[in-house]
Image (cartoon, rainbow, N blue to C red; front, side, top):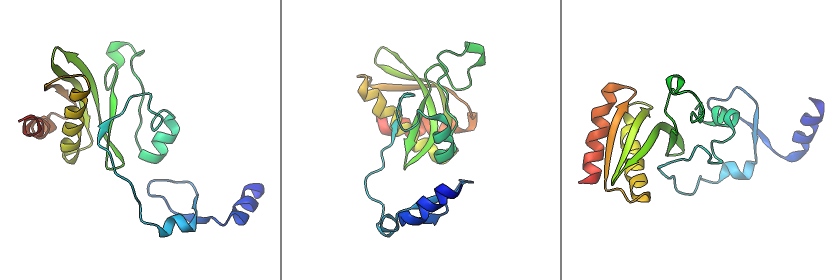
Length: 160
């Protein structure tokens, strides 16, 4: 309440609106004048990655609900045993439950945030395959069946 207001008033921070947030937010005016910098990775994230570990924060910042389902009974799992969120362009655009069979990375279950996510998810799968010395990627289940073709086409292009 009042104590927070007093500290913020003395901080030099300015109120800002953050898309998708229903709560007040503040920023350093100098930070607002500087263009964003850095590179955006496209990659699978471990369920233990600090970017997504705090569930409430992940939901607030990314609008993305994530839960490690390894300890959930199989019939109650929504996204898979070890679903890994896909980070692309500073957003979480899907998730993949990966496994390995010989030299093939198997995407046992894939969830995509629309067709625009297919290239990023394909790129993340190909990169993840290289981490575990796999030369091929196979997709088993896609939550939205109409997104299977865009995903597998992009995988075939990247693996060619």
